[in-house]
Image (tube, rainbow, N blue to C red):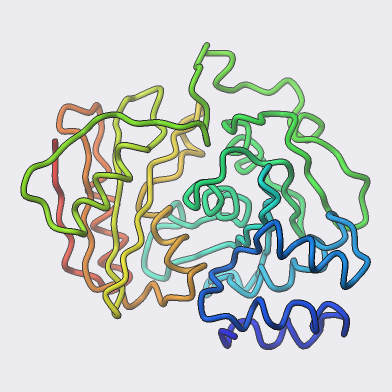
Length: 294
């Protein structure tokens, strides 16, 4: 088990500890609990889907990086596949506050990057802020997404975001978590650049068409890529670097030990991710950053 989970795990009910232990102690555990594992946990503990998600919130919050606020937020996204995905807030010393990641954004993006096609619900230990409500409205489940909070009746995103403005108002047909392929290509690229290219091809940018992806190389050589997730309201858009940092962090790697990074983006785009990507990575101690434009 990754040391980050020790304290939270020790506070879980005994039955859940016993059932969760073989899952979380697996070397391949990367903050995802599969549908079959969820079924086993429910059978062993007698918990329902929502009760299990609530019980796992402290484990998700253990993934939080909050050196500025010291405020640790966890989120658990349940995909239509039945898989559960952990998410947590992430803050970066030395980078502008706008570069931080909210727990709901983290869980949603984590699910998306793992190949989930749509979300059924998201469970969080604090009320989603307006920024996150708008971010989640970009999803293909839209305002029907179930939002579960401790001590409150289950509600939908539509309940938390009445009179919502989103992609459907702009007649956007391809929504966040839908399959996308922008058919960008490169010749003679290395593994890290190809990972960033694949992310750019699968990015969600229906308003600007500024497709972009980032790939990070960890200290042990493992690669984590992230895609741009654009929003109808623009500001809640999640840059590709943040998506890659999400995947790296929930996989148990130290984002402060990123060895190398590549940004792939379209050359003729109306804006570039380069300045913010380079500045944030420099704040995290990574100076080997490359931009590739197509």
